[in-house]
Every structure is written in C-alpha cells, then in structure tokens.
Length: 231
Ligand code: ADP
Ligand code: ADP
Ligand code: ZN
Image (cartoon, rainbow, N blue to C red; front, top):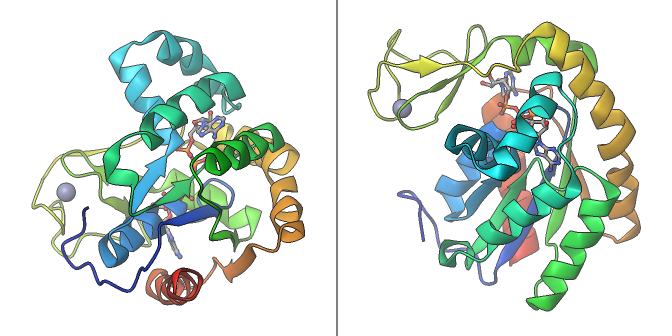
C-alpha cells in the first residue's frame, strides 16, 4: 500500500482506466489519485521507458517506435503490463495510465482481469482539445528524483528550480515531447485509442471529465468518480 495522505474509502480493489491523448493530464491525475486513495499508477509509457533505459530485449524493440511517436506492439506492452500487475502492491487497486491503447489491448485486459476475478471500475475519458495538446506536451518536464510532473507555463514549482514534492533540483524532459512527434502521437491516438471510448461505453463503465479545466478541479471530479465506483 502506498500514499501518505491516503483515505480509506475504498472497499474493493479498483481498476481505473484513464483515457486521453498525449498531454490530456493522465499522469498528473494518476499521481494525485495514488496519494488520495492509495492506488498504484501503472503507466505503460513509464514501464517502456524503464525497459529502454535498462536495454532489455523489449526496450530495444520499443525504442525507435517510441521516438517516432508510434505504438509499441501489443505483444510487448501486454507482457510488461502483466508482469507489473502481478506485483503485490497492485492488490488495493490500479490506475491504468496510457493502457489500453488499442482494441487488442482492451480485450487482453478484460481476459486478464477475468482470470483474477476483477472488473473495470471505470474507464474515464479526459476530453481535451487536440490543438492545446502540443503546448501541454512541449512544455512538460519532470523531477529527475521523484518523477513529479511540471509544466513551463501551467504547473511550475512553488520555488523555481526546486521540486515541490522532494526538494530535488534536477529535472528532465522526454525525447519524444517535441512538436513533430506529438503530431504522430495524436494521429495514433485517434486511429487506435479513441475507439476504446465506444468500447467502454458499450460495457457501461465509461465516464467523462472535461480535461481542459484546472488541475485541481479535474482532480476533484475524478476523486468523486473514484469514490462512487468503489463504494
Ligand atoms: P499525459 O500523461 O496525459 O500525457 P500529463 O499529465 O503528463 O499528460 O500532462 C501533460 C503536461 O500538461 C504536463 O506538463 C502537466 O504538468 C500539464 N498539465 C496536466 N494537466 C493540466 C491541466 N489541466 N491544465 C494545464 N496543464 C496541465
Ligand atoms: P503520452 O501519455 O504522452 O502519450 P506515454 O508515456 O503514455 O505518453 O507513452 C509514450 C510512448 O510509449 C507512446 O508514444 C508509445 O510509443 C509507447 N506506449 C505507451 N503505452 C503504450 C501502449 N499501451 N501501447 C503501445 N505503445 C505504448
Ligand atoms: Zn521531486
């Protein structure tokens, strides 16, 4: 179990999916939900970047695809996701951030959850304007020590150059967070991931939030949804 400010409103294991294009705010909100509810954020992007950094076979195969803004194969992503879901800290519940991203991944997730006697609590679509996502992604950076997310214009640390969460002073930017690659990533989102909105609507688990609002307002809306679906 994680989360310093965790409250104990969850009565069953939650499986939450955050759906949205690059820059929608999935990672930002997932980290806030982790703290509030003691859930575990599971970002396939983070897991893939760790595999690339570690130079594993999967990482080597994923690297060039990620740099080009394409989607890594379902096979690689599913293997990484399954390994992570098998770790004990996920027992209280997970927030899937950036997964599933294709219909094949969504079907594989359904099968995996069924095996474990789990079900999707909610798939939350963060609705945003594509045009605003280039600025969101281009200005994104994170604390090199704790991973807290920031933005050049929209979310600066209270003290310039010093992480609010851990006091770290080193920050990093992703190689694929540039204006050219964002275009390819948005195209991949609309072609492969956006159809999942209808997929989850059909299953009765779809919720939507306005992702263009302020970070705290969105967090409050998401918190209310999580409270509802896990009560
Ligand atoms: P995603 O995980 O969906 O790609 P992030 O959570 O990393 O998106 O957010 C992308 C960038 O936009 C980050 O720099 C983050 O600080 C910023 N951001 C997140 N949510 C908002 C928001 N509601 N308004 C303005 N900027 C935001
Ligand atoms: P963002 O939310 O900004 O799109 P992510 O960190 O979720 O970024 O993903 C970064 C990259 O990792 C994607 O552009 C893609 O190449 C790869 N990736 C992450 N998750 C998946 C997934 N579920 N399926 C396929 N590729 C993925
Ligand atoms: Zn930090």
